[in-house]
Length: 145
Image (cartoon, rainbow, N blue to C red; front, side, top):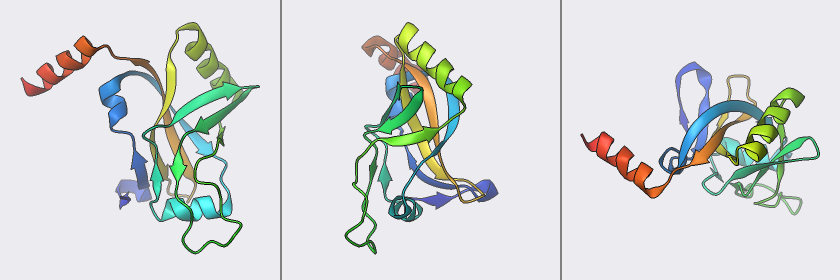
C-alpha cells in the first residue's frame, strides 16, 4: 500500500476517486495532529481516505471520516480508528477554504496522505466542485480518444 518515491516522500494513501468525481480547483498541503499510535500505524501504511472530507468550524479545520487502522503493537490506549483529526493550516488558508466552501458551495476533500522527508505526516487537501454525470462521461470519452 505504501511506497517510496523521489525526495524521500513516503506515500501512504491516495484518493483516486477524487479525480473522477470532482473538478479540482485548488490544492493545499496541511499537517495533521496525530497521536503516537496513529503515526505508527500511518508509517506502516494502514490508512484509507476514500470517504474523507474536511469541515471548517470555529476557525479550525478538521479531517473527518478518515480511517487509520489501530496499531498492531498498541495496547489498550490505542486510538479510535475513525475520529476527527485537526489539520494544521495557517489562519489565512483556513479563512480562504471556509469562504470558498460556503460561498461557492464547494467541498474540501483529502487527495493523498504522505510522510515528507522530515518524517512529518502531511495531507494534501483540495477545494473541489462536483462533476455531473455528463461531465464524467465526457472525461471518459476524452481519455479513450
